[in-house]
Amino acid sequence: MSTISRRRFLQTLAVGSAAAANFSCSERDKSRRPLNLLFILTDQQPVSTLGCYGNLLNPTPHLDHLAETGTRFTDFYIGAFPCSPSRASILTGCYPQRHGVTTNNVILSEKIPSLGFLLRDAGRATAYFGKSHLSGHMYRNVPERKPYDGRWFFRRVPNETGFVYETIEGGVGEDQPILGFDTWAGGWKQYHEYLERVGLGELLARRPKPGNHNDLPSGPNTEHRYSLLPAEHHMASFFTQKAEQFIRSRRGSTQPFSLFLSYYGPHLPVAPPKPWDTKYSIEQCPLPSNFFDLLEGKPEHQRTNKVCYKLPNWSKDQFQDYIRRYYGYCAYLDTQIGQVLNALSETGLDQNTIVIFTSDHGDMLAAHGMVYKMNRSGYQELANVPFIIRIPGVTRPGSVVRSLSSSVDIFPTLIEMFGLPHIEGLHGKSFSKVLKWPESSFRERIFVHWANDSFVTFDGRWKYALHWNDDVDELYDLENDPGELLNLWKNLRYKENVRQSRQAIIDWLYETDHPYAELIERDKREERI
Image (cartoon, rainbow, N blue to C red; front, side):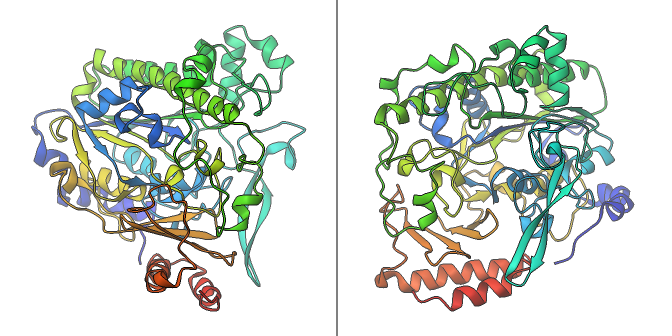
């Protein structure tokens, strides 16, 4: 498949803008100002944490209201896992085999057409506040962080069995604008400067440097813990303030804007600021129905990953305390998001601003006896994420899209909405059809590039996870086993289903130009089901 460079994009911008079928203009009054974009992204937030997705504690009233006034997707999946690959797929509309961010701490090349550049080059004011994780290691100039005092990034290089990663000195982390976003605030250098300004310099000097995901947890993960940072000066509040200021500065401007607000939570260490850590009691947070899982017949890595698989070591109360802190963190973030949405409303900019909310992946939240995130898997808790979109004059309030869709589809959809030139070679496709007709179908199957050597496909019932460097794959029937407890991969009754699912992944690898498609096909062909 062919690609388009940023240089060629700029050359075709004038022609493409005139020739493109402008979705926004066909659906809205052409006399109104161009649409703005507010894109809100959380880190590691599963659908089970939102009221509009069924959480009975209703920890997210502001996001629930966004869903009531916009469109909610129920079967929306990440295109890649974990953080960095997922974020790069959102911004480029491609899987990692195209954009190159195959694991965390890899730099997204500025040669790849990505959303920030396209929007800025089209004349929009661009801003990014929060986590990007697309320019190398996030914690910079810290002597105890090896190598290179944290100033490094990964580069994938081939070897005789596939590839390895080299650690290279460089990258800018979160400390300066990248990828076409002119206004910027990251969670390291800029946040430290903020703490100094608000009188918390002593805390900054006394404790290990807070920032990014380090929100100064009060204790180890085996205990109830909370952030030692006050709620009003937590990183989430810092980015909320930046977003509010930016939105209010746009009042009266005729130049459209595109703002990305990317929170670091509720990602581990799951230490929300007080009093949010105790907003819910343990009794209010029961364990999920698929909590107990000895992982028999599943990849050994799932059992041996002691960071994630806590069933043999944690008590029931420890798991429930983890869940309640998670819900509390999500509730805290929801109040922050509410402030930003209020700023949009108070300035009148909500009338011509596209608002999107999603997350880069989920958290196990005690499912299968796990917490955090798990490589060499493909569980719903990690892959199925919330997605809510509101477009004034286009989305039907309270509508629900139940068709399969993927985060790689966001980029081409926004290109169509803003009337930007078509880019060849994208892996995603515009879902504008289901925004107009939510009951219509979109994708028959989704794929997820999962942490370097696993690949997942799902057709709405059958989920298959191909693990390149493992002798055990996974097949689940979500119609009869929604908790994904019984791996059917070895069951001869489902041999043909395994063959078809595996072939679908192999075909997808070739179609998306995966550099190791032939090697993966050869290695998996040699296995015996």
